[in-house]
Amino acid sequence: MAERLKDTFGTVYRTLAFNFRTLALFEILYRAFGVLIIFPLVRWLFLLSIDVYGLPYVTNALLVDYLTHPTTVLFVLVILVVFSIYILIEMVHLSVLFRLSKQGRKVPLGALLRLSFARIVRPLRRAHVVAVLLPLLFFVLVETLQVAGVAATVSLPPYLTQYIEEELWLRLLTLGLLVGFFVLFIEFGHLLQVYILGREKDGSYRVVRRLIRGRRLRIAGEFALLNVVINLILYAFYLLLILLASGFSLVTFGQDLALGVLLTVLYVFYVIVGIVAALTIVPINYALAFEWYDRGRERHGIPEETPLNPELKPLRGVSRRWLKRAAVLGGVFLLVANFFTVLGVIAEERSPVAALNDPDIIAHRGASWDAPENTLAAVELAMEQRADWIEFDVHETADGEAVVLHDYTLGRTTDDEGNRRVEDVTLEEIRELDAGSWFDPAFEGEPVPTLEEVFELTAGETKLYVELKPDKPSLTETTVELIETYEMEEDAKVMSFHRDTLRDVKTLNEEIDTVLLMATFFGDFSSVVRAPDFDHFAIEKHFLLTNDHYIDRVQSEGKTVQAWTVNSQRMLANVTDAGVDGIITDRPVLAREIAYSQRTSDFLDELLDRLFDRD
Ligand code: G3P
Ligand code: CA
Image (cartoon, rainbow, N blue to C red; front, side, top):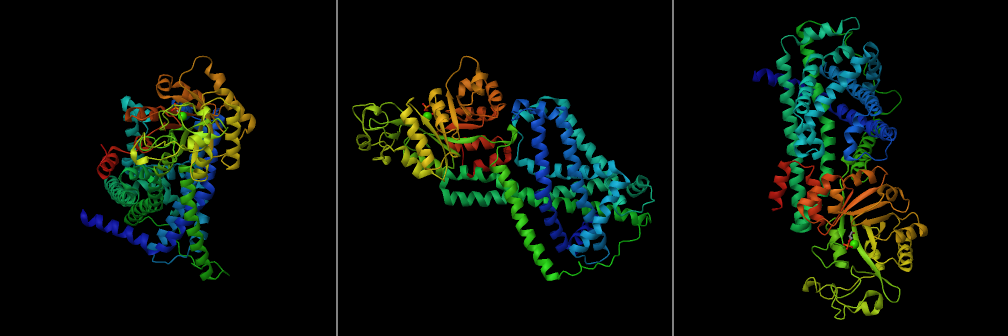
């Protein structure tokens, strides 16, 4: 048994290694084609399916309805056919390359592309349905095993898994589907080789049945063993990345920031492992499937169509040196593009499907759990803690200056003994106050900042929620002018409990996003949500969770919801599960951990707990 395994996997290895450079160049070119053509096409179809579904945003509550909507099913089928033909292209090239490798022929990339192109149409012509279904079957199975492997690090959002956990029939169906795919793959997987390399006149499935007679279990065993080994290697690679990054972030950012930083880059690791897996897992599995076909064919004396023994001439008139240089340069550039394209979509763009988005982490009054609220120290710390946005409060002094401070009076957060009102003192008087000692003597002398100082510190570095406390047109004008001066229209949202204030902001500059604050609400919520003056809604956490239908209502208008002010682990988990778009919190690092740990597996959580001795 072990001998036979060794022999099979040894041959597979040699098949992959013989023309390895051409294989690597082809895979990079092929992935690049995928990123530059297929990926945008599939994404366009996905976005179109949401438009046709009729809502600008698919909230968590609507996700199942969206996925089962007839037009979505149609789009999914179109996407699957596009994807399947894309995979078929890879398989045809791999079949041709492996055949020539086993014949001991060196194959330049140009020759491989030329030879394979002619054979792509053949399976589609000979048996459209099978030629489309098989690559998909192979890909889904191989990728499912890979996702199952990496998925040990990614847990599905609760509202998705709750269906599967609660409904036994769903769990059985999911398992049944996987087993079914596996059986189908064993039963029909060779058809592809027969279509691509076999003789035209051979009855296809009759040939396949001879190929696999008495070997089904062995094929299944070898396939399962190979994928367990591949996934263990990928998993070890992934954990190595985590350990290296943890060490680096602990050394660079210190104990309390390290985890927050690591969690923000965790995505990058998924992308890296995903790209490495995609580049390796399909060719390796396909090389094994090719070996089964080849052995079965030799065993039963099933000849191939005139064996592939072309004149493997490189492309005429192009100097090999330049061709190689162009291929390598092109490959490197496109691999980088691949990485940043995928990273860009994951990291930045808000997907129109809630389930694919993580909530923004918004530092409330700066990182006010660890520094005096509404000071430059709290803003700087929030930036170090990698908050996505920083929220703070603004008042106007007696001489019309915009200063950053929460209360209408000075007594709680400064050493002003008279507890005077902000609007009754000048900026000069306020600048004499100490806004740090009340929090911790270590912050003695920390001044009350002006709004402009915060903009100077953060412009181009981070993004802001500027909450205007009083409903004062002069303060609104000053704020809008400063946003324009520092060109922060994209990076500063203006927030207020006062609707008139936000209406004034829109009148002054409709480019600036507005956020309507709500502690509670009575009346027709829909009319407020549709109002053009309000782009986002920051709703008090308890009120929001008891009215979580508001989230769908707002998101269905293509607007967003932030929960405030959320500091406990339980509430952070609750608002994350509710599907909010942002969490306003004094504790950005904890919020990031909780929000992101909703999608990391228990095993990874356990590992992070040990690495960062989390409670
Ligand atoms: O940003 C939401 C929250 O800040 C509103 O309440 O009192 O903390 O400014 P408050
Ligand atoms: Ca506030």
